[in-house]
Image (cartoon, rainbow, N blue to C red):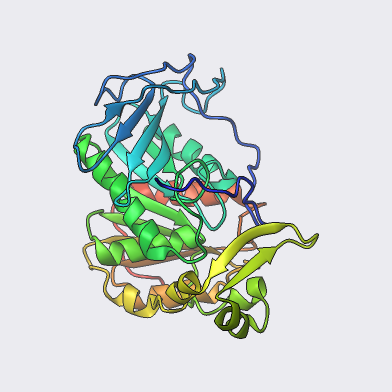
Length: 331
């Protein structure tokens, strides 16, 4: 039996809360069910890659609706996709009437409802492109146990989602990931090579960095002695457990080798803020040196969550997705 994620509150101090965005919904209350494969209706579907088509759920909760959705012609459909471990991933499909779809991937301890993800979905659907945003296993509403590393498993989760969309006759135009989600889409491109475009937002190049800030200076000694480290906030409240296995998976993920293995047929964009306080902008230039069909865009003054540059970020992402070619990184 898959373990339900035990951490309902996952926002960290650098989490990207919504900046002036609107809630997504269809103009009418969502229906409880939708016929399998009927993406024009609203409802909640379950997709099991081992069984093929989506299955109806016995129960589904209705979602809230709003009269001022960014794209009033888009419908919002709640979808469950079963990953290769038998865990249900919860996603929201914003169907604009186009079969062209962009998949959005959240960052560390975040979810599909993170502010950056919601704002990007609004900007993309305004251009008539459908969007699928979802929770990785162990995050948000999805089943599974939260893990500190989990890069490969999250890439596999993304593959389950992309496979679902292709099976449902969608044209996956791009996968977009922020922060840790940026690393996941980079890794995904190196493994699966089945999407034409990848957009990496503020991903980390050197995964050995950033660990000490979260786990403390003597983290290797502690984890070798105890086998795990429990991370707490400043008030001592438990946030999540880091196992030795998940830590080593992160430390052994070589983004240099991963970047070199990405096909030149994949159009690749990296977007990063010049004032990123979590992951330095220099990491973006490392990706740019190694990924063949790559274009880099640095947003001046933007922090890790683009707090004061959210519209500029959305505009750059939409421009990247709708442009004709990635091309080379400008000097």
